[in-house]
Amino acid sequence: MDVRPLRRLAAALPLATLTAAFLTLAAMPAQGQGVGRAAGLPDFTDLYERQGPAVVSIDVTQTVKRSPRGMPDLSEDDPFYEFFRRFGQIPRRGPERDFEAQSTGSGFILSADGYIVTNAHVVDDANEVNVRLSDKREFKAKVIGSDKRSDIALLKIEAKDLPKVTIGDPDKLKVGEWVVAIGKPFGLENTMTAGIVSAKGRDLPQENLVPFIQTDVAINPGNSGGPLFNMRGEVVGINSLIYSRTGGYMGLAFAVPIDIAMNSVKQLQDKGRVTRGRIGVQIQEVSKEAAEAFGLKSAMGALVNSVERDGPAAKAGVEAGDIIVKVDNRDVRASNDLPRIITSVRPGTKVTLTVWRKGATRDIAVTVAEMKDDVAVPAKGRNAPAPKEKAKPNRMGLVLTDLNDDQRKELELKSGGVLVEDVSGTVRGNVQPGDVITAIIQRGQATDAKSAAQVNELLGKLDKGAAVTLQLRRGEAQFFATLKLPNGE
Image (cartoon, rainbow, N blue to C red; front, side):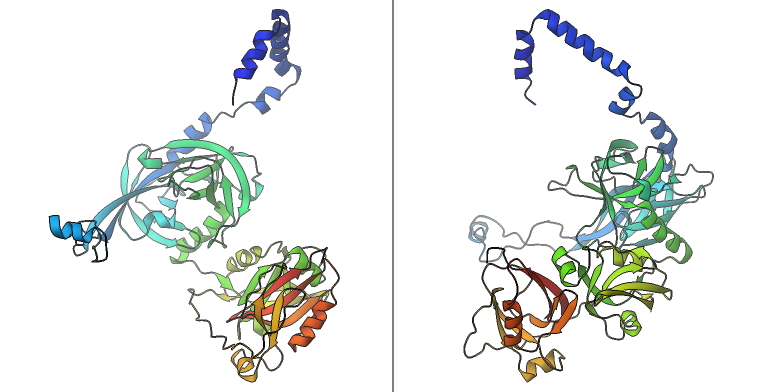
């Protein structure tokens, strides 16, 4: 902030005016009880004194492989190859050897008998884990188990009568509420930092099973695994991730909600591993336009793209095009809510899905199966040769052609199906050349795509500004895409 204009303004005012102004400002806090408390900064000293002893430092020894030189091989195409050949030895990478590497993190004591919680990535591939308490005592820790999906690990040290944290309720957290972290950033033990809750239920790429708490608390390397406290001194999260272009704090920190963490902790404590539920569906978000096309009053739920053959959902009768709006009366407000709910269910449990289908809701009972490790499934080729004469784009900017018998057989379609040969024009949406349209959805009704002429005719009848949802196949994947015509078309 540039304060120079304020100084010039003060110099120009009469002394009597300035005196009156300062007296008025000085009197303001006394005119209303609680104004000073609300406007002032909170005092964290009591929280630190009470909760600091339950926070621990974690030092990890790992074995890593690297070249002793730490330099890459120089190929003959490298511009420096000739220089080193003439004037010195050409750098060559030596054979990789095992080296000991040290890393640090944070954690907190869960029970008086020595159970400690931290991040899974803190103790990954650890040869030795040492825990240091705030009173300087040190212990070797045993890794009871870790869960990479929630980034939670459970440790155990042989000790008694230890100070322990109190577990809070992250659902009661409010955006704007003060929170603090205690940890070991850059190796500086028992460091406290403070900030506010910036957002809740934050989705991050590749982390769709955890609704992160976002804060602006200063979190740096070494804080990983440390607790996030509310002002009552309760642990509401575990500091796990930061957004950074430099490797250091940039104002965006993310914590795993403690209820998610404790679900993993309990399973690790009971059986040493974490199991999760699955029902065998691929889903996507329900946009406003898609909700209109399916006849849903508001954009909510999880739209089922495809159903795994012989999976739990398929056996129960779930179909592609269903919108799952509830699980056991728990609202599915956004698509990411569904995997979070289902994965928290114990495999073998029967749940009731409330789905929106053809303008009405229905309940479907599904027995949840156990989630296995992800296996990559290669996509089939589309085998879509270009037609002899290229068709013209329709109103949506899509160039469509009919599928031949071989293409239908490969896609396992008994009939119909329309190939998107090209995409052009001003209409935008998640449609690519090579996609296959299998159905058109409008006002909650689905019409099978039988031919390019039929689809072009249906799209040609749309009003200006109208939206239409297409059911598409892309390789092995099935999904829905909503396209909208511009109002001035």
